[in-house]
Image (cartoon, rainbow, N blue to C red; front, side, top):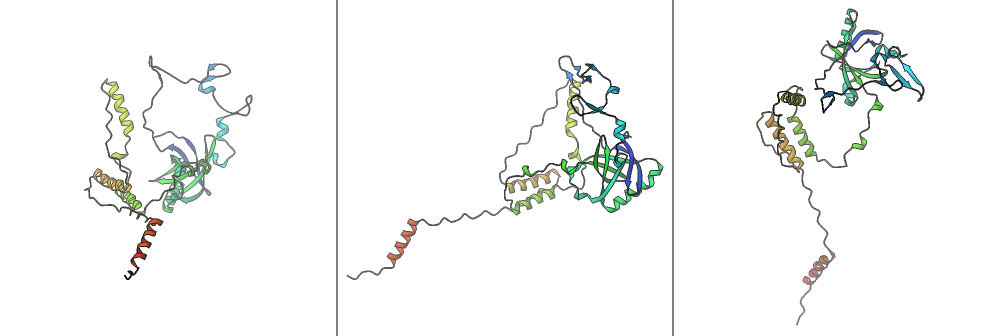
Length: 304
């Protein structure tokens, strides 16, 4: 069982739910240390006091705020835990919103909220069932690690999950990243939708969603341990560059079907109609010739 990160309560109107917070995710990445390459001696970061010019232990280290270059205000962990905020000891629910109204950019790390003891069992289950039936998520405030945060509470199976959220002013505007102004044909949109239908899934389980980078790194470490040749990098598939967007969409649909073992049925996606070239207006010289010819044809022959 993961260790408890924080203990407090969920404040829901006049209802209080004592909870313990534990991490909801695990990191399986392969970690590296730093080594001196000449003799493979471990390189470590040491904590040194600038005034005494000596290494200090963790017990001697605390937090401080630099007011001026010569004045530092010490802040203890106890003082941070007892901030004059209602959210210092509680996750205070501010309201309930549909999940689709929350920009995913604002949603961060996830934590499980565990009921703390028998007294918390009933109000905890009440909140789980009410949230699940409402189809909404709760937006709350809480204070951890020296700062107040927004949080999003949702239900996963029979447990409450708290996601850290970014404040609105922490999200950058994408306006400067917008693409240049271009026209997209309706048939091209239909072609993209056809490709999306082909790639549609009911879940995110399967071979496509495993961490191949970590697996490849583990194979390299094992090969070096056994003093074996390193795994070879697979050659990328050579594919002709497709300049026609509709042709690329059509080929992508067939490739996706082949990858999933479906029969490759060649369906021609609608292609954009070519715009008819505008007719050039006749030049003055041509107009003059045609006018002269017309007038000449209309003359009556002279009588001899």
